[in-house]
Image 1 (cartoon, chains in turn brown, yellow):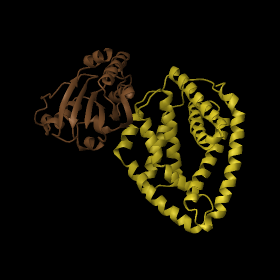
Image 2: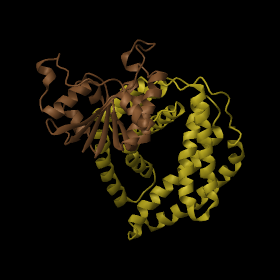
Image 3: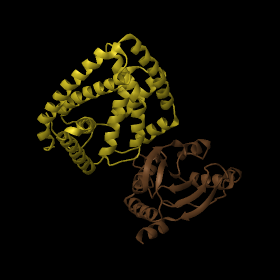
Image 4: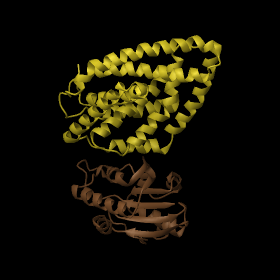
Amino acid sequence: MDLWLIRHAIAQDQAPSGDDARRALTPEGRDRFARGVRGLARIGARFDLVLHSPMLRAQETADLLQPVCTGETAVTSALARAPDEQLFADIQGTCVALVGHEPWLSQTLGWLVFGWRVYEEDPSIAIVELKKGSAAHLVGEPRPGAMHLAALYPPAALRALGRR
Amino acid sequence: MLQLVKTSPLLPVDTWLGELARQIERLQVAVEPDPVHRLRVAAGRLSVWLELGARHSLRPDLWRLRRSAATVRDLDVLAAQDLEGAWTETLRQERAVEAACLRAALNSPRVEALLEGLVVVPEPDAVNVRSAIQHMKRRVQRAGDGLDDPKDKDSALHRLRRRVRRLRYALDWLGSDSTDLRTLQEHLGGLNDLAVELARLEARAGDPALESRRHAVLHEIQERRSRALEAWKSIRPRIGEL
């Protein structure tokens, strides 16, 4: 299967209420990510499932992915915490996008590719840095050590692809 | 009456969010008819609230939640009728199975995540609300236009029922008068309940004990359909004025 790990787009530094889960995307974040989605469309990404965390910025990023979503959208709190087996159980389909947060997305990537939770041994190890609005494309089976990293798209690269 | 008096502010979302959470809690204890119905209503109203804010995420989750309670609700509506004994027992057994599925769905972490997600969504802004109402209005009108096609009348009525419900919920969020839509929705809802019953009766077509009920339902469907079409004709011009 194809699994895409997508970090939410640029969001407010702080929600008016001060609640981290209520941070919305900024207008700039929306605009940039919408252009990045055109890049995803250009490279043929079509998701039959988009899973997102309950946090507002992830919901809003998942909304912007609608042009490349051919199937369902679903919320899971497994994307709002360090990765665990529950997250892998939620992944059903042939091309799935996970819209979530750092450092958990890169921890997920490390676990799926290397097979063990590198960050638990040394939290300072950053397997990969996912900028806001970037996407990592993994291929294989969604279980620890059974995927490989096919491509990593920084947000600017996705936008550039969308312009072509 | 049918009137759109304003497009903001909306009624506080906490009212229906709290209602949804309360009914989920009640159903986790016992799958009684009242919380099943109220869960479906709250989920439907919250879905419309999201649509008013031009938000897509969480609507599929609310739809799945509503759907997980649909069969139990259908069986509860049937159970409220004066049904023949042996069939009642079959329906009771089916309900027990469906109720167990519903409880399992409600205990899933997805439902908790849905509630967490709903809590953080801000109130829809007036521009989105205005545009969403116009969109819902056009959808109702198109569904109503489908009634002119005699070949597709049943599915057109079904479509109209769902779209009228969403428009009515939208007006309710705005505190607008939706009495006429409610009346139409009740006619269409009653018709749908009968259609569900008829489908089940036809699945047991060989049972002579149910034959008189089947004829009665067919007759009631004709009556209800006429009343629903009358109600639609009366409200149709006013939908365009919203």
